[in-house]
Length: 103
Image (cartoon, rainbow, N blue to C red):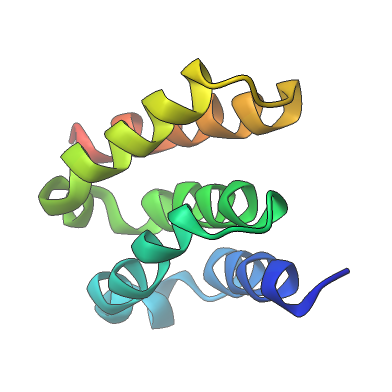
């Protein structure tokens, strides 16, 4: 597995395991992850989107300021001719972000 794919996956596991430690850094993590949604290797945006979904379960309302950009990426992923796994990750991420930011 490529390093560019491993980093978002490991970040997602860290976020899920250390919720209290991650909470103050959600904004910074989002700033780093959002540009990676446009990365060129096909697996990277999918892994990043999954990590953002995990981050949403911790961050909640902290996602409101980047919601338009994130939903735009998710909608583009669902509409493009990508594989079913990538679409599934996009829809799952949308659900996580929507559920957690609605509180």
